[in-house]
Image 1 (cartoon, helix red, strand yellow):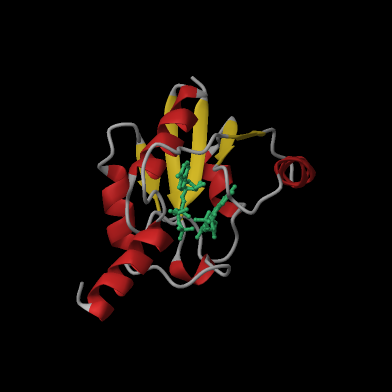
Image 2: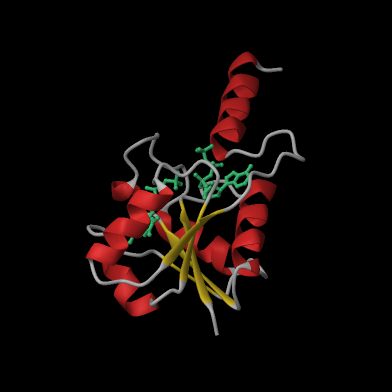
Length: 142
Ligand SMILES: Cc1cc2nc3c(=O)[nH]c(=O)nc-3n(C[C@H](O)[C@H](O)[C@H](O)COP(=O)(O)O)c2cc1C
Ligand SMILES: Nc1ncnc2c1ncn2[C@@H]1O[C@H](COP(=O)(O)OP(=O)(O)OP(=O)(O)O)[C@@H](O)[C@H]1O
């Protein structure tokens, strides 16, 4: 059994998320997902949806075997329990593939890091863009 791990915020679900998770699952036999805690998200605004609710929704996706909220302090901590063979990085995740692989090795993990493709066949495949569209539409009463 090859276990794949995917990660992310998953604030407002859209087909880009489904594509990412589907491509990640294809890399192995089972797909675990770590949903990021609000306190761990530094590079963009705080998500609209609370962490536990985001975990509930990701767990409902057919392609996902198990989604959890992970650690509030250390991204490497849940890896000891989950024990993935592969980490699937999304097309725009800010981790450098080789650097992450090197850090994992230094910490004693034997995990391959693979970057998966971007889904382009939808108009607003980004939680941030969906939120922006809602703000624009409601603030101008279109
Ligand atoms: C290997 C790995 C492990 C992670 N573990 C955690 C974790 O334990 N807790 C957490 O809140 N986020 C975890 N994250 C998610 C990052 O916090 C998350 O990718 C980022 O903050 C959210 O941004 P994104 O949606 O652009 O990826 C992990 C990410 C990676 C790549
Ligand atoms: N259009 C897309 N195609 C493929 N993967 C995507 C797409 N959108 C998001 N993902 C992937 O889904 C995972 C979770 O992404 P995240 O929750 O940051 O969503 P997002 O829509 O990119 O958010 P934001 O718009 O706020 O940056 C990441 O690995 C990301 O690369």
